[in-house]
Structures are given as structure tokens and as C-alpha cells.
Image 1 (cartoon, helix red, strand yellow):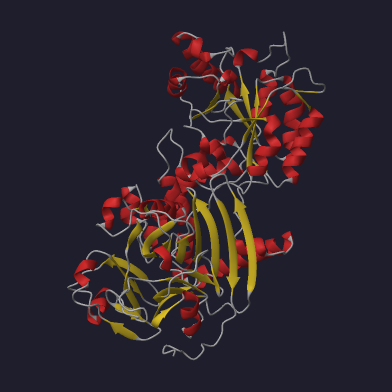
Image 2 (cartoon, rainbow, N blue to C red):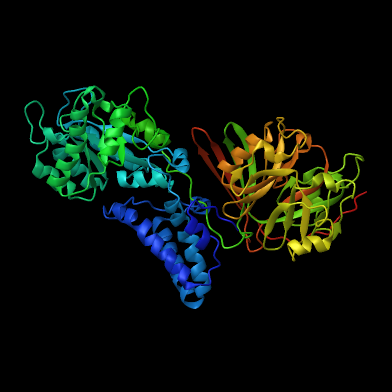
Length: 627
């Protein structure tokens, strides 16, 4: 298991530890307290019912238990975890590392300010901007208090979770997932209606909100009524409320004011608000949404950490903004459409102390960078070396195993149509045979990925013709090896897509073709898959890295590309027969068969997940010598 960290201390002392030392756990706890809990406390102090609940797993989503049943289940789970800590400290420490570790790593690897984290860019978090709230509308951008409450009801009915700007800021820097359907509510100009109507509704619905205030407008009721300092102090003292600066005088266009005036608008407004309210002001909103590089630099110099803009012609989700100094918003008139698309982002990769060969088998169809992929993950990986060439579906049926999914495997000879001859050494636990590669062929395979599988681990190492063409050579690398073969090339290594130079002249790597692959994802689970359309190897690797795969090798390409799941081919073409396959066996402890389909659509990605849990069956008699 390998974790890649930008933080040298973490990489050195934390991410690759074996949980034997309580000292390491104290270090972990210190990191969590100093880095993770302050931001979490900022969200929890609001006592909001939506304070980032965990995103349900696929299994939980399939459940139709009541909320009380789920609460009871969580209590039981917590009790079991505490019991484990007391009775088996090793497992307790392991659970702590696996549960808390991803969050600590995300915090320590936050994107440098003011850049937005790559994981946050995948999310769709709408920020909604409001202006005046009145008993009766006067301007086209006003809302009545009744209209606002109807929008709050819509938010509740749609299962959307309002969040604070503190939560969003943390998400944009670290990529930590937000609630499943988040939204941020913002109110500009400091109108009296914000205190008279909005503030009571926020308390009624327990929704957090952001109020952007121009300091000169406070207590100013000459044209429109605004909040008083007393009212603003009351609001600022409530954990549901965040106050941001909206400048001093609310110029129509900050880009046109002098340097001296610009400094006053950014610096003085912050100082006045912090002095009068006794609270830290971290955020700024550009009046009328207008800014340029000079204005943004002034906002940065004044000490703000994030700035909100608005542009009716260019409304984006928060993660699609250019930087933290130019975070986009939607008009309140777009609320319904915006929250319909809201998504809090992908879950963090799970940490496993070792590989996970016990998770249920799942099929996922997704589109990344316009590349259509279908993949199957989970279970235990094995290889099947057939006695001749067959469709992968038939290889699976003849294997005598409980495997439910398979992808066509490594290099094989095209000389004889009925041959199972492989190029390079091959070993399969199904046949219990090791077959060395031809001495004339194996020099051509030097440096290509040698796949090694044992009952508890998988390794991908560069093939060395002088060391790895004997069983003893394989066992020197992995003493309990049960399966081995040579793959075509790495597509992803240590979470990084591989460049064209890494393919070392592999024939056709840069030509669009159907491609088959297999590897290990960030949850340390085996994963197999194919591209449903022609794609070059470099583009495929880039897409697979975005799906969260940690190490992936290409096993085949062209018309022999094949993927089978639950006895059905998942490719559109009729594949050529092959002699070898990488297969997945579901956990033996799963006794029931449950199917659950989950469909998820995003702007750049559409995914379908099918969860399958299979009843364990007795192995059939093997038929490795069909007539």
C-alpha cells in the first residue's frame, strides 16, 4: 500500500506506518486536532442539522430502513467499534487510521492559496445571491418574505443542505466532500429586511447564511432602510450568520476608483466591521461583481481569504471559479435549476491497511473526458489460463470458480488460433501451473508490468527477463504468489497517469482502439474494465486517474477487448477469443444476492453503479480440456 503526499513529514512518518505504535496515533491525533477540528468546530458551532453528514454508501442507499433504524444501526456500529478498541487495540488503531487518515491527509495536502482543489472542481456547489427582502416588492431583484420562505421550503423538500461559507472555503481548498446536495445562501447590501425577515427565517429553518455589508450603509435610511449596528451585532453573534465586507461606500465599479480609494474600500471596511462586531471578517464581495487584477490584489492585500463576484452572463458553480478571489454566484431566480444539479463532490479515497478483497462486487458505467468506460470493482482477483482460446464469457463458465466478472488478460501468441500460448511467464491458481515464457520472446517484455497476485496482495513491478521467468524468481518477489503474467503497459502508476514516453514504443499505444485494463483503486480494491469506444493509451490513463484508480495496467486492446459481468458481455462488439482472463470472485461471506442500481449524472460525467452480492456457490468441476 502506498500513499503519495506533498507533505514530507506525513509521507515519512504517517502514511506508510504499520499501526503498532501509540506514538504514531498521538501524532495523528495532534494533526487532526490542529488541522481538522478547528474547521469542523466552525461548522458545528452553528448547530445546524446539516453539518456535513457522511454521504451514504451504495449499500445504505439501497436500504429502505426508517431514519430511526439507521440511527440505531449507527449506535450499534459505534458500540462495536468501542468494544473493538477495548478488546483488540490493534484493530481499533487500524480503524482510527482508516477512518480519520483521509481527512488529515486532505487537510495537509490542501491546494496552495488561492487555487481551488482538483476534487472541489468536480463538485457542483451553487452559491445563491439575494438582495432586498420586503413585505412588498419594489425592484425586479427584490423578493417578498413569503417568496423567500417558499424558496426555503423548496430547499428542504429537495433534500438540499445549506452550508456556511466556512464549510465551502474548506471544501474548495481541500476537496473534502460536502453534504450530498449543498447550497450557500448569500444576502447583499445589508438591507433592513435582512434583519426583519431573513434572519428570523434562517433561525426557523436552521439554515446558515452570509451577509455582505457596506459599512457606510449601516444606519443609513435615506433611500432604502438598512440594518443598524445593534441589529448587525445581534446577527453576527449567531453561529448561523457569517458577515462579509461589501466595501465602505459600495462604488458602482471598483475597477474605476483610485488606488487610495480602493485601499479604503477594502482595508477600512474590514477594520470597521471587525472592530464594531468583535468578529473576524474573512470574506469580501465585489460590489456589482466588478473587479480586475488590481482590485483582486487589493482584496488579497487587505487580508481576505475569499471574494465573491456575480455576473449574470457567466454564472458558475463555486468549484468552477478561477480562484478563491473570484468565486461565482447564481441569481436567486436560478435557485430551482441550480439546486437540481447540486452535488457535494466525490468521497475521499478510503484508507485500508492492506488490500481489500472482501468488498462486494460492483459494476460502474461512467464517462470521463468524453471517454465511455465500464468497470467492475471489488471481490478477490484471480487469473484464469484456459486450455485454448474462448470468449471470456466461456472462459469464466469453464473455470470451475465462483468468479462473476472477468476482463481479457495478458499477451498471447497469434500464431495458432486454438493455442493458449502466452508471451511471457504465466501462472494461474485455477490450473496450479507455472509456465515460463519463451526465451526468445521475453527480452522484448523487459520493463513491462509484471502482475503478481497472492491471497492478500497485488503487486505491479517491472518485468526482468533474467529474474522473473522462473517460479523461484516470482516467489522471491512475492513468496505466496498464486497468479502471475506480464501486462502491456502501465496506464496509471501511484495515482499518476503515465506519459507517452513510458510506453517504450509499444505498438499502437497512441492509436485509438478499444482497450482493456485492470488494477487497484484508492480503496485498495481490485478493479477491471474496458473503454467502450476507441481511445489512445495516454488519454485513457488520464481518465482512469480521475476515477480514483491508484495503479492500472493495460492488458489488451483492439477487437479482443472484452469484459463480462454476471454472465453478460459488457462490450458492444463481438470480441475475438482469448486464452487468458483476470477475474473477480465475490466475498464468500456474502450469502444473499441483491441488485441495486444507482444512477448519477454530472456535467462532465454520467455514472451507473450496480451493486451485486452473491450467494456463495460450490465450485463446479473444472473443464480445462474441452473438446
